[in-house]
Image (cartoon, rainbow, N blue to C red):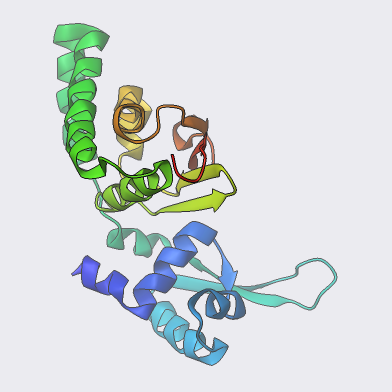
Amino acid sequence: MHDRFFDSTRGKIVEALRVRHAASAFELAAEFGLSPNAIRQQLVILERDGLVAGKSVRRGKTKPTHEYSLTTQAERYFPQAYDRMLNAVLRDVRSTQGDAGVAAIFERIGKRAAGKLQAELAGKTTGERVDALAESIRGSGVSVNVEHHGDTIVLTEHNCPYASVVAENPECCSVIHTMIGDAVAPGMKQTESLATGGAECRFEVVAPARS
């Protein structure tokens, strides 16, 4: 149901607002190549359904702009992890096997995921591998995008379905690091993290166009 929703214009607007945090109808229209009126029609429905809320804001000395942002109700459209159960299981593992036991679980998960990616990414450039990783991450319910700035490739995750798990079990973050290090781009560095209070998880790597 949710996958089909995100294929629609309304679903794409919800995803865009998840990334942007707030945007006007004109900004969304420019992003999707539609008219502002067409976007407003979709926003009216989203507002009626309680998924977005609009308000007037003043940007500098210009006249007020009507911006839209997501409501808490919109979160139901993004996959939610079974946080409490997973935390309880990991808490039990930690109590019986220590921190090393929890770390080993996520290391095995990362290694399996990296092994699967390695077979799929053989012969691809660094940029192509990062793009493939982003697509894989989207499959777990994460809003992610990749930007190419010359030789620098930036992968950004805008949300984390496992936020409350990471808060108690930071070892969870090792999965993406293992996937990147083993299968995608060993030199990729994390420059911002949701787990440490950042606005997003941001990874960067410098690579020649055909490496």
